[in-house]
Amino acid sequence: MATGRTHRPATRSRGIPEATVARLPLYLRALTALSERSVPTVSSEELAAAAGVNSAKLRKDFSYLGSYGTRGVGYDVEYLVYQISRELGLTQDWPVVIVGIGNLGAALANYGGFASRGFRVAALIDADPAMKGKPVAGMPVQHTDDLEKIISDNGVHIGVIATPAGAAQQVSERLIAAGVTSILNFAPTVLSVPDGVDVRKVDLSIELQILAFHEQRKAGEEAAAVAGAAGDVVTPPPLRADTAAAAAAAAASRKGPDGDVPAVMPA
Amino acid sequence: MATGRTHRPATRSRGIPEATVARLPLYLRALTALSERSVPTVSSEELAAAAGVNSAKLRKDFSYLGSYGTRGVGYDVEYLVYQISRELGLTQDWPVVIVGIGNLGAALANYGGFASRGFRVAALIDADPAMKGKPVAGMPVQHTDDLEKIISDNGVHIGVIATPAGAAQQVSERLIAAGVTSILNFAPTVLSVPDGVDVRKVDLSIELQILAFHEQRKAGEEAAAVAGAAGDVVTPPPLRADTAAAAAAAAASRKGPDGDVPAVMPA
DNA sequence: AGTTGTGAATGATTTCACAGCG
DNA sequence: CGCTGTGAAATCATTCACAACT
Picture (cartoon, each protein chain N blue to C red):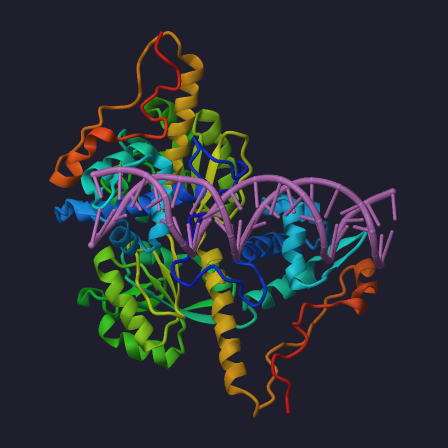
C-alpha cells in the first residue's frame, strides 16, 4: 500500500481494526458503483471480487460494523453505502487545504474525486508570491502568510502537503499550530508531529522501489530457471566504503543471509 | 499508508517479509541524507528516529538482510546504502512509462525524485491525439497506438497508470500483454491482473477517507469529554433505503455494535 | 561500555470452516 | 438451500529483553 501511517501506535479505534478501516473506502467505492447501476443487493462473494479482497475478510470486516447483512440474501447496497459512509465520517463534509501548488498540488486541486465524497477544497496555499491570486482549479491561490487565518476561518482539520521536502516539516508545524489534526503528506519526508495528530504519507518513489524489489526478484527467478549454462553471478562486488575505521576493522567478518552464495552454482 | 498491494498473497519474497520491504526505501532515504552530510556511521537508534520507526523494528528488519552492523559501533552508512540499494534492485536502472498525461501524469513526469534513484522515465503515453508530440517535462508525449512498440523497444517492466478510472483496466491489459509485470496505479479502480503481475495502488481519496475516520473519532471523543450538558446525539437517522424487498423484511432486526447507543446519554 | 542480532513473547490480521438464520 | 457472522486456528508483524560481540 502506497500508504503508511506515521504516528499513533497501531491501536484499534472504536473497536475497528486499522486494517479494516483501510479497506472500508474500497468497499464503499465498489458499493457506490453498484448503487449507480441500481443493483439492490450484493453477496459478500460478489462485493469482495469487486473490491479485490476475499470474501471471508470482507465478512469479518463488516462484522466489526454490526450485522448489516441478511443470511441467504446478502447485503442491501444502499443501506451499506450509508453505514460505511457514516462510519468513515463522510456524512459531513470536510474542508481541506492544499499547501504547495506546484505540479502535484495543482493536479490534486483539479482532482474531481476530491470534492465528490465528503471533501471540499477550502483553500489553495502557496509560498510563492507570484502565485498569489492566480486561479487554479477555479480558485485563487492564497499566500502562506495567511495560512493560520485560512485554517481557523474555515474550521479546517485536514491538510494536504504537496510542497518540496524541505518545506514540509515547517508547513506541518504551522498547520498543526493552527488547528489541523490530520495530514496527508506527499512530500518525501518523515514528518514529526505531536501525539494526537495523524499523518498519512503518499510517496511515489517508495512505491516504485517496492515494485523494483519484486521485479528484481522475478528477474532473478527467471534467470535461475533458465541458467545452468552461463556462470554469471548477479551479485556485484561489495565495494565496501571504509569511511569509519572502527567499523572497517570488522568488515572482514560480514555474513549475508545467503546473498553471497549464487542460487545456482556455476557449473 | 497510501499504499496497498493488490494481487499476490502476502507471501515472503526471498525470505524478506513484505512489511520489511516496504520500509527499506524509508531507511534508504534516511541513509542517503546522512551520506550527503558525510556521516560515517549511525546507530540503530539514530537511524530509526530519522526514518520514523523504532529501533527494535529497524534492527529486526536489517537482520533479514544479513549482519551488516558492528556491535558497539553501529552501521556504516555507505555500506548500508549500497546493501539496501542492491536488495531493492536499484543498482540497475528501471525504464518506466507513464500512461495518461493529464494533470497528474504531467506532475509525475516532472517529479524529480523519479529519475534520481534507479528509475528513468522512458516514455509518456496519452490517448489524446491532440497531445501527441507535445513536450512534457522535456519529452514528447507519444500516442497510445504505439504503446506496445514503446514497451518492447525500451524493455519496460514497470508501468505507471495515471489515466481516468474508466481507461485503467484496459491500459493495464495492454501494458501486461506487452511485457509489463509491475504496475503503479493512480486511477481509482481495482485492477484485475494475472498471477505474477504486481500492482500497487495510490489513491488520494482512500487516504483522505482514512484520515476522516480518525478525525471523526477525535471529534467524538472530544464531544464526549465536553458533553453531559447539551444532549445533541451525533448519530443521524438511519435513513434505511428499502430497495430490496427481501432484505427489507429483515431490516427490523438490525444490530449495530454500539452505534445506536450514544456514548453519552442525554440527561 | 555500548550496540547489534535474535530467540521468545505478544499482538494483529488473515484464513478456515461451520453453526445459525432467513 | 444459500449466505452471513464468527469462534478457533494459522499466519504474519512487532516488541521485549538479553546474550554475544567489538
